[in-house]
Length: 488
Image (spheres, rainbow, N blue to C red):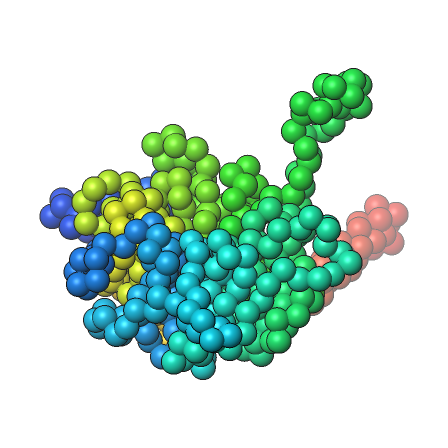
């Protein structure tokens, strides 16, 4: 009875919060629609997690317009590096988005060298700059002063074809200096080089998803017909990033893939957690019917969170370490905050940056109260501070009573505190069946343990009473037989 009452109270609180949220409010200041998906994969409105703060163009910096910008990276020291690919230069800003310097080339063997349509860059903890100089078929490594450290050119290896063309597109670097390169036309995986630029091998490979109907048809076709058919070739990776533990995050450009995001351990195995309601692949219902998400960049945010950039809908999707979709922001358009041709994203402090090639500018987004609260609660949960996260999750529910992850977060905190009965109600509201089963088993065991003594006493008393009744019945029956026999 007590359990039923408490569960109804939890439901009543949720309904009250929902009614508060349903009161008409002022229009969203965002130039795009914010939403999330519920357990039934239905898109439901959501408070804005990030809002556009400002945009920065080359003209704003006084250096002329950006031309086909290709990448952006924030160094550990907080400096922002914009790869202005069309102008073959790197524009460096400070944390307040003020111009520091422009790198247009470097000296090598006594002569001035320039970049040729570079595709990506990365800055390590010592402010060394790694540039994927695509047009020159090399990776250039510069020190903090812009002096050449070394270059990585076409590797010599028995596992590479003799006609292999080394065209690096994107890259990232781990703490010991290993360089991970996404190269054009490479399907075997991400190319890995040691700190001296020597080729080590490949990391990770995208699985080939065969169409078995086409496979059978291929077996029955002529040689000429087979030549016209689609080859079963693995998909190229589109971008990479790395976390503090050395795990490589990578995206691929196959819209039909169910695993377009990977987290690769040192052995190259995908260890990304996918415990959410649906697949970790950006949009799942093709909002406005433009087709599946095409993920072109990934950024590790810390505390298990990561964001991916969708070039189909020009949106950013952010997940926690368990694969739950936290929030979505961005969209197509010409207003400030909407995107035309996004190519890269980064994080600077609590701001998120998206580089828009179509508008030749850098868009700066800042978190709202809702977005900041979600980030804080997820971080506390990741750090094992679930009790501290509860009051943050409750703030989130005041802003969005339909936010399932908040209910689950509170439920997990209650579960850690062994408040199994209360946790049941929150897991039910969050539609977390697995956690609900765990809480129910613990609650059942708790009830059995708590009431076992009483149950055992009642069972013994019942058995004793049954024995007494049986003896009494036998005694009365014997007296009746004796009476009928005239013995009394």
